[in-house]
Length: 111
Image 1: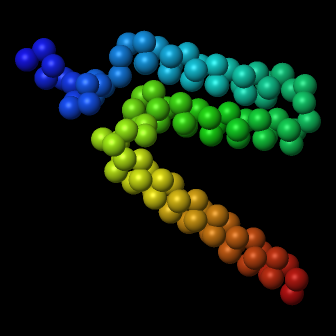
Image 2: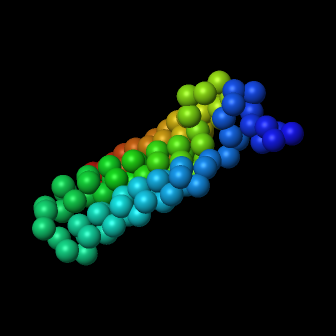
C-alpha cells in the first residue's frame, strides 16, 4: 500500500517539498524584481509597465506548474483544456468590454 499516493504513471498526485520550494523561491523572485522596479524607478514608465506585466504572466505560469501541478501529462489534459478555455473566455469578456467602453467614449466625445 506504499504506492497508494502514486497515480498509475508513477508520479505523486501532489508536489514534493522540493517542487514547492522551487515554486516559492521563483514566486518571491518574480515579486521582488517588479516591486523594486516600481519602488526605485530607473527605467521609463512604459518599459517598467511591460516588465511588470511580463513578470505577472510568468508568475501565473509558475503557480500553475509548481502549485496547481498543471503539466502536459495525460492525467492533467482535461484540467489544462478547462483552464485555457476559462482564460480565453475571461480575455474575450474583458477585452471586448474595454473595446466597447472605449468606442462608446470616443463616440460620446465626438458629439
